[in-house]
Image 1 (cartoon, helix red, strand yellow):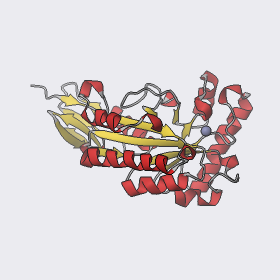
Image 2 (cartoon, rainbow, N blue to C red; image 1 turned 90 degrees about the vertical axis):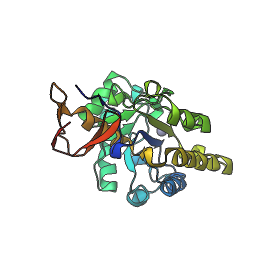
Image 3 (cartoon, helix red, strand yellow; image 1 turned 180 degrees about the vertical axis):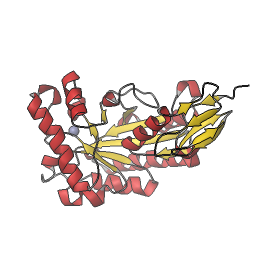
Image 4 (spheres, rainbow, N blue to C red; image 1 turned 30 degrees about the vertical axis):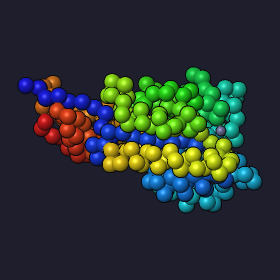
Length: 271
Ligand SMILES: [Zn+2]
């Protein structure tokens, strides 16, 4: 009899994942990163590299250390309106942002968040040409979807203002058909945390994710989520579903008869 194979497990066989995405690189990112680090959560920070010398921004020379363990991604070099720019300006906004952020981080920067959440077909075409792998848009879906149809139109679950103890409870307790994939994707701006109450609110949601998620929660950056999902999608199965090969460079987990099974990187496994 063919065993029951299902998808939607995160690394380590975990059932739920959470990722945060914060824009503009304002000084409040320092406190936000400190809080995420304390709760073992991870964020993606979308920076405008031409604006990092402004008074209210983090400074270029702290980018590498401040965001260590998190992800730095593009947000246009100068935060122009994407849908109003001529092509050569668009190109510069994306490619120059990428180049500078890669210099500052010493890594690869292939993620992005659209300034003002705006994009069109031409903007997407430019992103592809610039080697951007995913781009966050700004329509709140209210869903815990495992992955978007198009990584260059990745809409989040919701703004951090929409997160409550109830939505977190729903996330952890929803039946599978209601929460396929079980990814809670939260976005916002650290400068909106402008009072002790707001910071306390952030700590309370971090605590709720930790308390309710316990060992079943994977905290990841946006790019880590994408890389993992793409590795699962790249699995190759025999027609009978009794063998599977993982051609990617990372281990992935699937669900077999209700149990998590690890498929090591680059290996074939009998199921
Ligand atoms: Zn912005």
